[in-house]
Length: 269
Image 1 (spheres, helix red, strand yellow):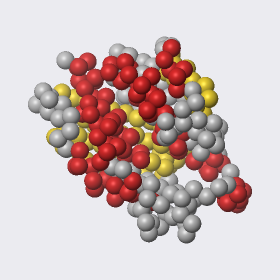
Image 2: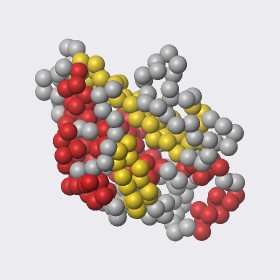
Image 3: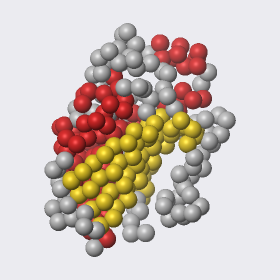
Image 4: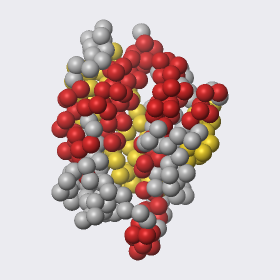
């Protein structure tokens, strides 16, 4: 193992505002994230407060960047544990959030939308096996066995350097369920190559494995728009090219995370 970082974050479930945060090993700058909102100001605050972590490509920076996406999907776990009628009553009592145009899945006319623009709670999910495998004990870090109400975002980026940089990446958002095990609501696999000298992206393919609505996989058709981009610039370029209905929030995060590949490549050389 070359490097390991851990973070602990307390996020207000209603506002997605960071209320407390720490990192291990500790970095003083992480306290500047308190008060930032996941998906709102969290990434701009992160870019300013932890610029050194971004430059070094540390695991901590990737974890902190993922607060935006992880806080967005965290509440899904309750839908697996609450009585459906009670869940729908709670949703109807909350302020309506118009999701139309937010992403590919919520494009105008999507079957994922209610008439008022809010999302339907009829997510397509898939039971998934545990991530660690007995035949590959080093394939994952230690994964806590959680049985209560919980949501997990798991991310993997494997890199091989030869004539080209070969990248095999995946992410999975999954929830525990009362009967045991887990179900995934988002899962993508990315296969990509990059130039070993310049780091420019040469090819990319997105394989949608599990997604909540029928329209969601359409986002995978657009990924070649970032070909020719240096891997190190993907965090900003992806946001520019895949805004709104051009992209999927979670696929965008998976592509942005490939900005960490140059750090992995340096460790292999």
